[in-house]
Length: 373
Image (cartoon, rainbow, N blue to C red; front, side, top):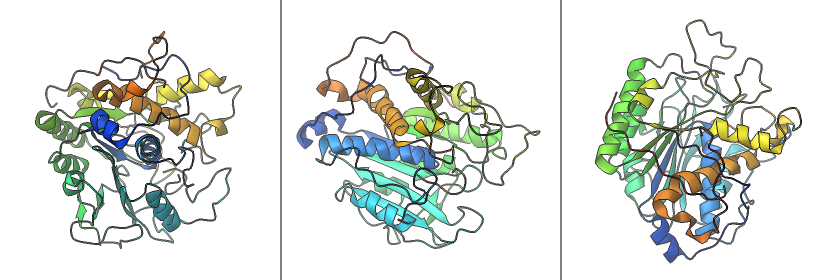
């Protein structure tokens, strides 16, 4: 079943504030992990900003550091090192950032890594970078140890801070299935996986069956909720298949880039194993239609100038969805909101180069997966 029901009306941008002690009871024991490319990273960062502003800080949600790629097709004066530092410092010592990017980047992103964990009041939000078949997850922040910690700490064997790293200097590098098995050593409550805009046609059926099996192990051990996140594609990209059903890669697919892809992997092994679909594409499509549709609203309302990364407002729509529709049913996170009228309908709900940058309603979570494919 899909976990993609949309709110009945636009959500407020004003977060309610609760003391850390109250947050402890609302989100206590919740450990959310994103695995994906920069499109997942920006959604993750927006979710962290929302929950941090609500429970731990007076910093406005809108006070987010800009990525070095900037907006309106202009470069930001800050570089990646500054972005890593600012986007970590923003959370007042509650985030660890295993982040590195070598410049100039040769071969696009084969010398970059970004893994993060935010330590909230009784909950953790993590992101591990994955670039499809271009490179698997890797880094110096140990997946199991970082989620078992209660506050930011050094990486397992090597220093862990923004800017540390060197080609061949990662302390670990694993396939996605191996990463999930490591994460399974910690009580992960929600896993959100997405291949994003990276080439994936070389990832075999065996690859996806292994991912499905590793997810099933996580569920058996901890009751982990497993979600496949769809990729939101702009209608301005030549050859793209925006919104709707995924456009699957095939042997006849012609790729214009050695790194990036406009088609999606066949994740039927995940669906057969009981993974739920978090249909980010459908959610943004509904948001677009609510604002007037592609013939009325410019694409820049939803995407940065590269046509790949979502603009802040669109990422906020997705972060709200995760907050209220994926986390809230289990955590009573919405107890500080005044519920809107019930929804009237449900919708089945890097990257030119390396990465840039609802109202609550009652929702029944999907049944957990019962078996591996």
